[in-house]
Amino acid sequence: MRISEQFNQKDSEYIKKKVIEHNMEKIPNQVKTANKNIGFFLKDDSGEIVGGITANMFWHHIHIEFLWVDKRFRGEGYGGMLVDKLEGFAREKAVRLIYLDSFSFQAPEFYQKKGYEVFGKIEDHPKGFDLYFLQKRF
Image (cartoon, rainbow, N blue to C red; front, side):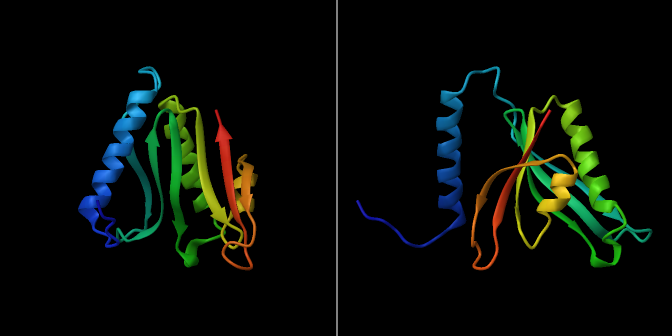
């Protein structure tokens, strides 16, 4: 046996597949749902993407991966509209909770105003900032 230190996508995908197989063996069938990537995008009149939210849904929960609105349109409610759209989708799909992480220099207060609660925090990461973990249950 030897340990390889070189990253390669194929090997990484293999490890991910094996962890997912293990997880699927452990949880009951009624909890299992398909793994689905989700995205809602804000486009201007020319079709350019000026905002969006991306997430992953499985096991009756959604993990928000990224929320972004172009600087030109921040503060106009578009971020809230994107979160509302995702939450509406979540309710339609009988999702139990949405969770995410947000650095202190990003938007933890924005999510808290939308009803998300902090359930964890890593202080001084990256140095001088904090990383928050937030959730909203349905």
